[in-house]
Length: 104
Image 1 (cartoon, helix red, strand yellow):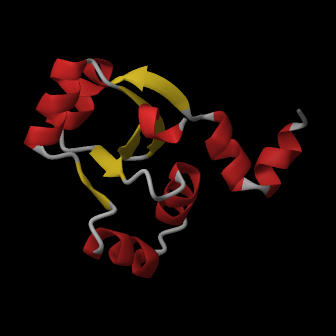
Image 2 (cartoon, helix red, strand yellow):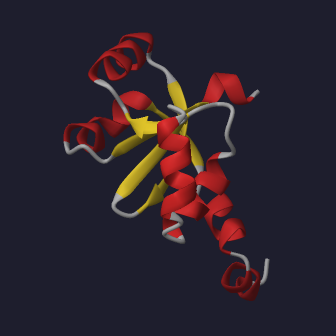
């Protein structure tokens, strides 16, 4: 692919940076408060784009609806014990995660 596509379409760049990873490998991000859970109802790439574009109004709506939130201690423990695989994308300073099983 041509790198100019990524310059023109930041969503395509985010899509290329998204990967499946075991939750256990993201523990340091959770411990630092940087792990953000994204509901399966939302498109992970779109959420990442809106955060990177600093669209505070949209992000606030998702947060108020409970669709985007810091990963809770209970959720982190459940994912750890179940050895859950998540989709993840870095939108500095955050790592956005979405349960992979719900995306299939």
